[in-house]
Length: 122
Image 1 (cartoon, rainbow, N blue to C red):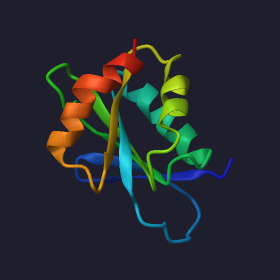
Image 2 (cartoon, helix red, strand yellow; image 1 turned 180 degrees about the vertical axis):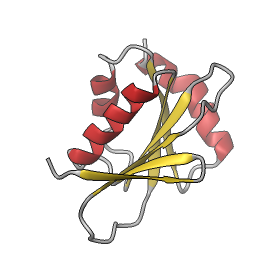
Image 3 (cartoon, one colour; image 1 turned 90 degrees about the vertical axis):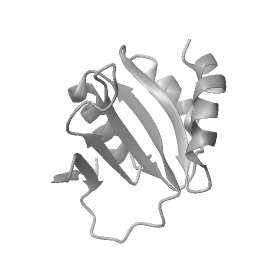
Image 4 (spheres, rainbow, N blue to C red; image 1 turned 135 degrees about the vertical axis):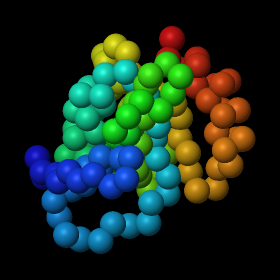
């Protein structure tokens, strides 16, 4: 376990590794949504500690009409998406929203979210 540090910036609580090394460029993030903020916080800590995410941020307040919190797991690339979804399978009430990379428009993101990701979550 590498350890992590938490801090609040604006509407987000950030979780980062303790190392002072600069991060490689952020390629995007995996979006998780859920009503249990504590469960999202635990997932974020686990992903950062295991170095599967470079950093994570969790909204301080719910961001959807369903009163869900958002958790963004920042990574260099979308690889490992299937493994992440598999790990989330045991967390009831947490859903995977998809990958949003720098080359992805918001329209592309929502089209993908509404079509192919639904199959993975059943």
